[in-house]
Image (tube, rainbow, N blue to C red; front, side):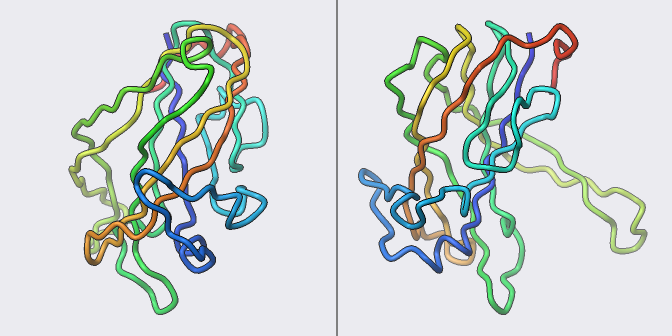
Length: 189
């Protein structure tokens, strides 16, 4: 069975400049209240072999088979970077998955945290990779049927300079799970 990674990228600098309300943990602000098009702030992508539609928007259609795993992670373009003159550095944390269709297409996502490793350019030799270890959290769900499911993800925006949560937001993407063609059966790790 395949693991289909879905990365949700949030433009938090744009969001925090435009949002008039920051919400609360129990009542996050729907991104559509900030901008009618949630595509302004959310960009969902997956490995190309599983994508059925144009990636990089707030909705995503995937090819999958019953038994496949969907694994969501979230980031921001500025995560971990030193703030710029016109930007801040934020992190995003997913929480509070909701769907009336849980159990029909997807199981309820479960939070996992695991050690991860990433590589970056060495300052002394730009073509020599240097490893950086960190902890990564993801939300995992199993595909139980093909079909269409509307769901909500809430997320917190954390100021990297202070560790303070500065906003709570939600958006309501959907996944339209189509039976994967035989050629996309390779597992993605």
